[in-house]
Image (tube, rainbow, N blue to C red):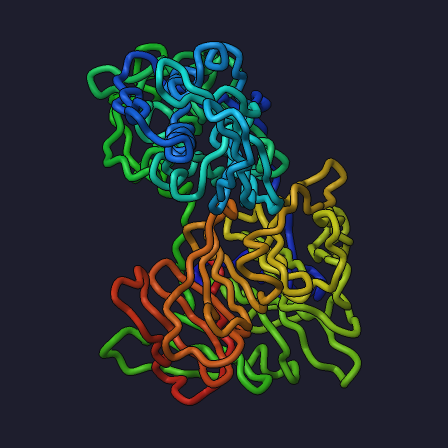
Length: 582
């Protein structure tokens, strides 16, 4: 069956003149360069009930310290609330760092004192991340220790000595901050990619905070994947009478204004703000004659791309690939072998796009594998051989594929626009410090801006940088959920919302969700999961896993689900899920 949309990969494979024409590169326009990340501050003129926080009268020194750390989650007024727990001189002298340290928990241990009018405590905990300017979370894993001195002031305990650190625990971060995505254009200028930020919930309206961050430009973390950001002269002047007001882009053509409007609309939509969205630029509508914008006007830029064609699912079992369709509850499943892939031989792993493009690893012998690319509608080309390959991962346009050869080097294969031949290039990877093991899993995000890797059981996430010579690199890598996973990660894939679904070998939590920025890990139901989860996959409304027994699924949201259920048409089959890539 031919797909409605043929990509350059498919056209090249089926073309009579060049059997090697598998991939293509899309040209892109550019917009103005990015600005520096915007520092997150309270929006002027809005009341903040948290500013009413006061030290509890006659509180014991250890309890006062805990109140202080809770108040430290409030950055409003240059940390006006936590300063109330300090002595007068210290409140004036304290210069809190811009970066907030997020601890899992912390312990207070008193130090011996001879002067009963003074107290001293050692604060200890594990840093799980750092919340920087602009609400950017960066994972971390190191011990924290500091000394806090207290003294009596007007008969009340107050903090007289402390470092300039701002410290909050994980619970306070969740209680007082809300994560949301701000969207910027990718390196091809054709898609929006998420930049996850944490906004202080009580200090401002979420919309005002996010739109300030939007005009401030991408974070340093995601910047290498962003070709452009908002023009330097664009400013957000606030909302009035329900209208979001911007200035700038006075000389810009309508296409540029419309592209900016798409960023605004999808950023607000992702934050749960209901549309339509009244937006003005220099006091007039951004595009057209109406100030009201909707996501329908920018459907082609929806950051969560739907699967447009193909079956509900592909599966791989015993070296053969099948398409599995009609697997909704109450339907009769339709299972068919994928002849174009199965004819290649014993399939070790595969990635398939919703238009039918595929990249597959074929077992040639006990000591050799081949990377093959083609279309499920016919036509294929062997790209390269190695001792072993990881499962390949397609780029968003499905016209290039990444794979790890022999556990170490990442390669990228694409059709050269100049020669029509398939070029295979190495991808430079900057792994985190003290990480130098075998890469056993590699998956590219739906936006193509990030990759997730498993290296010696650790989950590593990096950003894809497109360099001037057309080469790719993985930069700004970080180790996610290092302590929680403890080297148990076995499989990983991206979920459409940008989070990661991770299969592990840990009995207590064999399947987990890890947030896009590594800020938290959530154990998923595991009542009937047995053994290591060796394969995972997800659509917007369904998760798939393969444990030691069978292929199973669970709907999203999980709600009250306790057990995973076998996939219709695959009962009793230990198959790996292959979700069509949109």
